[in-house]
Image (tube, rainbow, N blue to C red; front, side, top):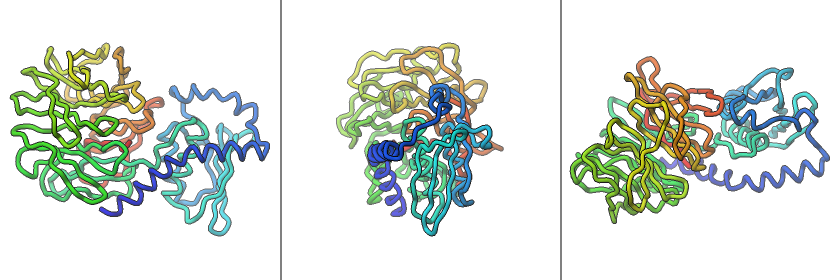
Length: 405
């Protein structure tokens, strides 16, 4: 368990250091007198944000670094290709215990950045380099140093796991020999909420990953599940059936002060918060079929969220961190499809087959579950390009992923 902490803290430190990195980059470009060539200046970056992959030629890296680096870049909008077809070139050279890495215009040769990295090379260094390339090209924070939680089946029982976003460096969180479900990160903290069956009926538990301390949040009879933490970490939305049918409730983060938001005979499920914490999206069968609804977090009347021609049984919504999109699963004919719709509703877009979508911190990538050869496996999706990559499969089956934000 303690192995989780250093890399989580490292990831937070690297994220907070991005602004300093940008300042250093701009200053170094000015002092060196380097400018992008006309070809690079004319790069229509919006075109690449909206669906085309950025061609990049990668060379000079050792075998321990090249594979994770290519993975990181290709799931964030790049396409590894030859120098002749590339827009950018990423080249590395080693000198003693130092690596020098240069990102440049592939055709004109003008440098975008050129900097050193201490050895030894490997997966961690590849993640740092990938995030800096993403920052330099797209102007957004990369996700290569982020983490996910999920449930994995081991010995016929579901347990909670935490890993790097690509599935490597796995840490097992629970060893209860009792089913768990619906893990979700506490925003900005080293902790999770999830549903545990250890004490019999399903109850929501908070789990501090620093200390290992677990606290039972609910003690109601019936169903207590689907915890969703507000962006400021102060409140938890959840599904409770203590009054009969499963309804949506909001409480303080410790489970106190429960407020019931819905009162229907039908089933509500899967709450997710808006960026400002004022609205909750959830699913309900209250008006026929399972559909998306929104409701003020302070209480009010639910409002149906339109998804256009995308129908079927709609489940598992997840609101993007930037507040613009809601990803969800549409079940049709026993097959799940990952879809995205504007947070205000409209015509949803079907992206790929799968279930359990969860947004990355960049509001561009999704982690989701799909069936492969009869197994539940986790995969990553780059939404603009629809490019999919499987993460490392470390359990017999893996599902219900949650991306740390």
